[in-house]
Length: 506
Image (cartoon, rainbow, N blue to C red):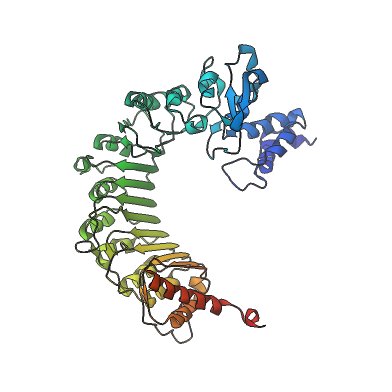
């Protein structure tokens, strides 16, 4: 054996290459058979290969099946049961592999033998979780159990070694049990860098208290709509030095006024922000805390429909560093497409200062009454744009003043543009300039959603689209059947134009 293979760092790199060979999903180790064979080759390879093989697990079943056969059995429906707690002498083989596990994470292995929910408490009956998994640093607790009765067991996994924690709030559990976990979380797992709390079912609302000194290393915080965060706690979160990703829900009783005038060294590292709010002014108050504004990605949804002045105030507060923005109104019973929810170009002019935008989604705010002049200015400002969605409410009756000229401007000034959702007036066909168009900027545009755009002469529109978008693969329509049929005629004629001369020959 070559002497270089005796150096652990070199051997580790080689084994990592073998493990990644043929990988389709970067989150799941697929090449397990080669690693297992490598571990059986010689003692020099064994430790490093086994470390890689067991480092990340997507189920507890493989470890359970390392226990003596007398401790477990497989029943019908491919469910694995732990029949009794292992004795002291029966842990040996389990410990050989469990000490190598550093992460329990998604994607959950659904094709594997499923572990019964009673197995986890039996497994932990005699030994503490930290003695079973001494190297564990990343935990998605839903991989181990989704049972409400097992949820308090998560406390045993909280330790200073844990850096990433994800769990789902149980559907049926008293608030005190959830509060107990939330209170222990910052006290025991003091080096957490990422916390994600989700809920798939309506659960009792609980408040999360985050003190700056308790989670000083936190970089990512994602919480479900069942977690309440007060304005006071928001200020604590805003002072976290390394927090770069934040996703949370803002409840109707959130006191946004308490945030006013507090923007001093707040959210110093925040780059990704996702908010689901009751109303947009709450989001404006929160975004105004980011000092200096260096957001790269912003996603906001809100319930109470906001007029143009409120939207303009929000857009004026987001800064100019954004690469992606999504602004969505959640349709309510009283949502309307009329005044004061008709939006003119001046409302969105603050976005023209964001020169690095790659993705823009303005969805169901009301009626977007934009024009060619704005679209042309936007196309010149957003030269790196890849996706544009400008979507009015479905029942908006105003035909926007955007013509095929506006679409042309996007194809000419945004060379990386791949997807466009836009309502326009396609009844008038512009003349192509002398010498034709530069199609360099339209090479990546493959998906066009023209929603309920009006259209006139279908063949002429198809010819024009063929000239400005030579590689369109999909044309989507969101309109009544008669209008949809006309656009399908456009697409059919476009496809015939796209066929090469050789394909048309008999």
